[in-house]
Structures are given as structure tokens and as C-alpha cells.
Image 1: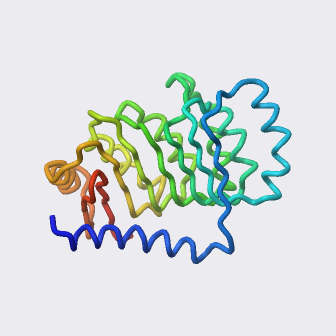
Image 2: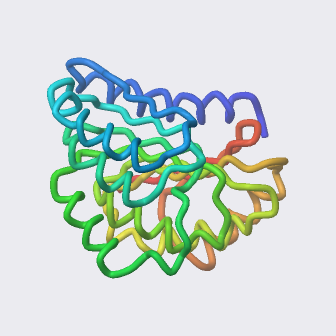
Length: 217
């Protein structure tokens, strides 16, 4: 694939980011580091909530492998101005914990959210139910980036997300970070789009280990 194609791909993402930033009066990021969460952490978060609401963070970056679903669900309602959500890995919880109550919590949060950009890390096709939670949580997603672990069935994961576009109707940019991504993977995903997903006016491109699918709404 030519350098021009790579440049076009980078331009698409840069334009998306630039356009989003133009709508911001200011960008304030809250980063949660890699600390172990316990009962004391929960108490601290509760005490810190008034400050979260006053500061009006617009970006939440979670670099924590121990983040729990109930803590995330507790933090987000205090961040009503968040437009961008990034998690280095999915929250730690067994799949059976994705109960009806958890889904309702996600949906109640989504009623006040402004999140249009989501990045999830360390994902495999076995994480479909967790991805579904974030689709329910952020129904206004425009840019969705998935960091895949080695060996992930990316075509299956892409199909799962694209079949749920009615839940995220504003989505028009889907990106996968894939270890050892190559042109064969690009062709495989293109075939899946043509035969299994069916998107009109789409563009699929690779830049290094990033494969992006972009289409017009």
C-alpha cells in the first residue's frame, strides 16, 4: 500500500481529532494510574466526586489493569462533560457479572454522557459482552478504537461491532490495533465488509499495526 494511502489514513484521523478539538473551549484530561483499588480507594473517590464535577474534565484516561466495573460506573456519573474515554484494558470482572443491573447502570449513565470517542485495550473476541456494555454506555460513539491482543479473531470482532450500529448510529470510524498487522489482514477484513457486513462508500487502510475502516453516514 502506498505512502499516499498511509498519509490519507493519518489525515482522516487527524481531521477527526482536530474537528473535535475545535468544538472544545478547553480540554482537561483525568488520568487514573495503575494503582490497586480497594475499599479505601472507593472512599477516596466518593470524597473526590465534588471536585470532579467542578473541574469539568473532558477526557478520561484509565491506565489501570485493576479497574472494576462498579468503580467505573461510580466515577462516570461525576464526569458529565467527558467526550473521550480510553482504557488500557477492559475492566476486571467475570462475564457472569454483566447482569441486568449492570446493563441498567450503563444505560442510566449514557443518558447524560457526551462520549464520542472510545479506545479499549487488550481485547479479544471473547470480550464481546464487555464491548456490548460500552456500546450501551456510549451510544453517541463516532470513533471506536480496539486494541487487540495477539491471536484475536479480528473479523469476528469487527462483525460483532458493526452488527450493533443501530445502537451507535453515529459511528463512522472503526480502528483496530493489531500485533503484526499486514496486507493479508486488510484483505480479510475487506472481504468481511463486502460479504458479511455490507457497508457502502467505505475506506479500509493500514498504517503500521493500525487498520482503520471509515465510511460515510
